[in-house]
Amino acid sequence: MTDALNSSTNARPRRLLVLLPLAVFMALAVLFLVGLYSGDPSILPSALIGRPAPQTTLPPIAGLDRDGAPVPGLDPTKFKGAVTIVNVWASWCVPCHDEAPALMKLAQDKRIRLVSINYKDDPGNARRFLGLYGNPFAAAGADASGRAAIEWGVYGVPETFIVGRDGHIAYKLVGPITPDNYFSLLMPQIDKAVAAGSAAGS
Image: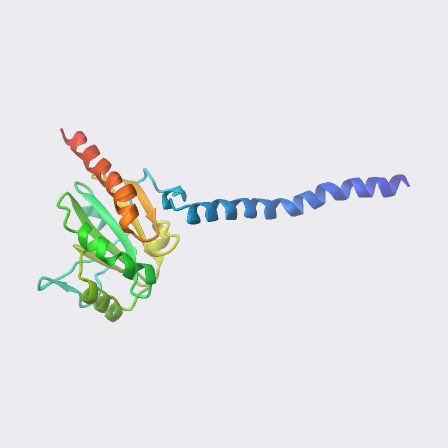
């Protein structure tokens, strides 16, 4: 009787240890889904906020021109000294098509430099995409392997990062730029990054 009681008592902690990883996974899944569906993409955490932008150099998208000149690839040394918006996109990404007009509008803002990471895309398809919607990017790096996206902590395309003049990531927007979050989320963060850079330079 005593042995049976001891066996039952010992089984309880073992059962709890087995269930603990499942409980942790479920808690993380709930956090992710709350951030994803709450309407505020900034709820999703990013370990890179406040840290230096990844120093990942990317080659240009093959054959991509803008105003008759080849569009360069991604050069992280050019982040310092300018507020840079980094958009991660792909021609096969449906929300990327939806946000294309917002990026064209954003490119008109002379306070910023708009560049991109083209994620796991075919160069011909990427060129056709930009030919259809217009090319807002001063530089466009081809991330054929997806390694750069991993280093940037990308959950999925599209995503947009704001890199301050100091080369540190100031903000991350998960999901497409929409007419709503363009004004309510993205522009206030751009204004903040521009103001911070101006204050640092004065």
